Length: 175
Ligand code: IMP
Ligand code: MG
Figure 1 (cartoon, rainbow, N blue to C red):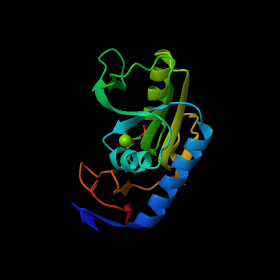
Figure 2 (figure 1 turned 90 degrees about the vertical axis):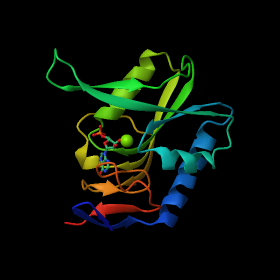
Figure 3 (figure 1 turned 45 degrees about the horizontal axis):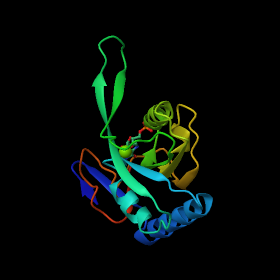
Figure 4 (figure 1 turned 30 degrees about the vertical axis):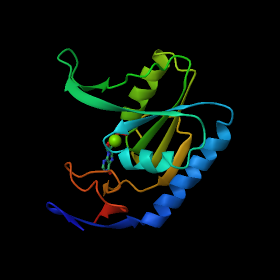
């Protein structure tokens, strides 16, 4: 598959993705029995994962999405990520964050902190993909679909420069 200047090869087939998503949902159904968790997907990358996951969730649960907007804080040198679109009240809620991929872990640690500050009674993370070697901060991740190598991937929601999200499989950059 070619996107712009880059070539990608298949990494995870549609069937394997679907089986894994169903297995993650099954584990969540079991772990949260008797509870009513609030699922929060991080846009844009998680949209397919969330859609497929929720088809297998049998708990009474709400689904919502947030986005992270990056801006440069003039006072500090780094890029600050602001969480936007959270309209749900998460006070005393069991929150399950759904993410497409965790790379450095910086995005996820920002989100977890924010939810804890807003008084969630529990915050768990389910990520479809994890690049363990790329982790820069310690993040508590309860549900992981696939651990992958530290190489760029696209498809099934994940993008390269905004493109490539619209596939049923996941592809890896061909070196
Ligand atoms: P982190 O803050 O470094 O963990 O970055 C996580 C975010 O970076 C994900 O939500 C993705 O949007 C993006 N990302 C990280 N690795 C990849 C990749 O291999 N392909 C596409 N997007 C990625
Ligand atoms: Mg993302």
